[in-house]
Length: 300
Length: 273
Image (cartoon, rainbow over all chains, first blue to last red; front, top):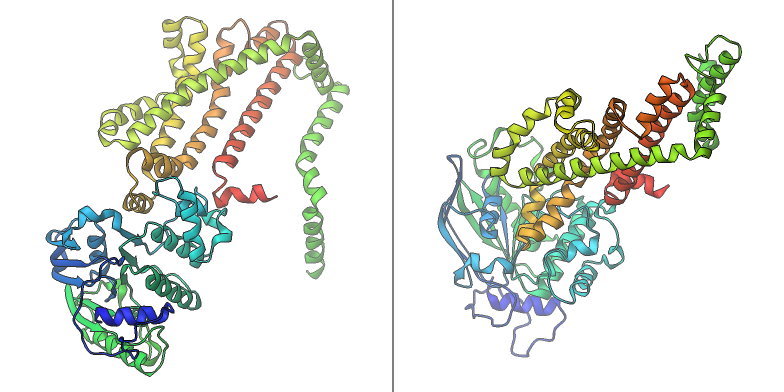
């Protein structure tokens, strides 16, 4: 999606009055991408990324460009390398080859601009919720900032609790607050909603979208749920056979509802994912269960 | 059949009653005491073998009134505490060292594992040769026995801290001392405390042996002295004192667990009651 479109949607959702010159209807035309100054999002550029573990190739010569403030979703079968891509972008692991830049500079210089939300919330069980959010913060008003971030995810009243008493969804909200309190310019989400029930997940989608619109960070979501990808992302990227096999723009207005256009995107991407013959890049334990196709929504 | 399940549930309901639950653990000891008292009074038990509970209680009282018992208890408690502090402190320190730094593990761990297999009490002859029958011999024995449980559990605790949490903390900018104090050390606390509880139990066992070898004061000295004068009741007082002090030490360790691990779901049930 063009930068302009993102701006318009964001402004519309955030209830900001648009300049009269801006077209109010969301156009699907690809406009030029002017560099936005002063926004929170980082521009990410990955070139020729290659990574293997113990001789087994996971990613091969993968390029990925993410515009500032863009929300991108990576989908693919289990073991396709989507989480590996995220770990490389996060700097958790070094790439075997290739380079990653943030705003044109080496990613290692921007470690503090990158924050990750993990699949499991990874809260420190021995710190109270507020202290978990304040983890790694420095400065005089640490508690205040943590409390504010906690309020943004709607958990201000749970500040003094131990993480052990929270539900799975609440823990992920705390993890989200912990990431946001650092005002990241790139937020990496590693299947953070995978373990949550369907209703909690929809709530989390709304929350993540709202906070993304408000803060303007660049977001990269790794997910196995195509419908989640379509619900949130500007672009859905499919990784297959160690490289990017599909890069689809989702040109639906936000907030997205599961209507006609939504289903079309979902079906197209899912069809593309399933098209690949079974067993090429899939480890044996991940074989698909056989369900009638219309029942499967995110079975990868 | 129906009848038996009916009476079964009646028993269950009776046992579930709060007051019954409070009384139940005491029933058996009281029963044993009663049998003991009766058999002594009836003359089935010689006072040389086992004096009646009442006589033990009287001996305890006279020792308390004379103040003799307090010097012994104080001496023994001091030895236990000092030995525990030295051995436990070293165990903690070395466990942290080998757990944190691989080179330290390679250098020390296999040697320590070898020494661990020698029972502390097997060293008594050597300890007497080295330290004589002095105070330091007792401290050495206690410290040596206490060292290993704490060392092993600290090492294991540090090594088994959730790697995911460490990775998360690093990606949130924590490193060095902050990472250590906020993530690694708290993550190892549960395991370290298991070592502490185990060691506290060992402390008293080792102290009893050390004090019966040779001492001028302490509970062990008191019982050995009483044995020479055939004061079986005083011997029993000494044994009961060990039991009591051991129980107190365990309560202390439990209290520490409840405080340090209050975040842990396994320890929160007790806090809510």
